[in-house]
Image 1: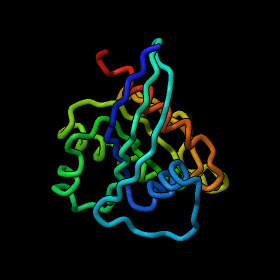
Image 2: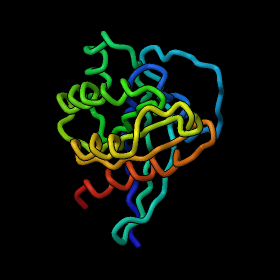
Image 3: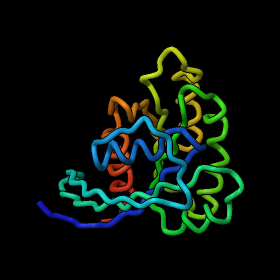
Image 4: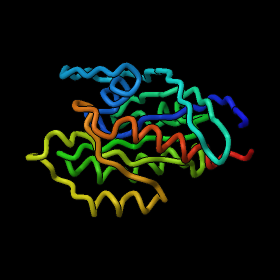
Length: 177
C-alpha cells in the first residue's frame, strides 16, 4: 500500500468562548481545563494522524491554528487564513447566537481560501440542560456549506477525535493523487 506524507494547515474558527482551544487541547494533549483563557492572535499545535483512504495510507501532520475569536480582527483573520486547507467551525450548543454567526466566519474564510473542506462542530454537549440549538438547525447550517457536522464535548471528549478525523478524511478526498 502506498504511503503519502503530507502537512495540512487547519484553522479553528468561531465566536469567543465556544471551546476552540479546549477542543484542540483535548485532541492533541487529551487534556481539559475548566479555566477560560482568551486566545490572543493564534496558537498553533501539531498532531500526526494516520488513516487509510482509497487504498493508500495518509500520514498527515496537522498544523492546527487556534484563531482569536473576537470580532474586529478581520484583517488579522484574513492573514491567519492564508494557506488554510481545512477548518473546524465551532459553535456553542448553549448559545444560539454562535450558530447564527457561522455565516460570517465561513464567508471570511472562503473569501481568503476559496471553498475548502470544513466541519461544523457544535460543542458543549455535556451542558444538555442549557442547549439552545437543535440538530435540524445544525444540519441546515452545515448543508449550506456542503459540510459535515457533529456534536462534541471537549470536557468529556465526546466526538472530538471524530471531528478532526472527519476533516482529515475530507481533506484527503479533496487531494489529487
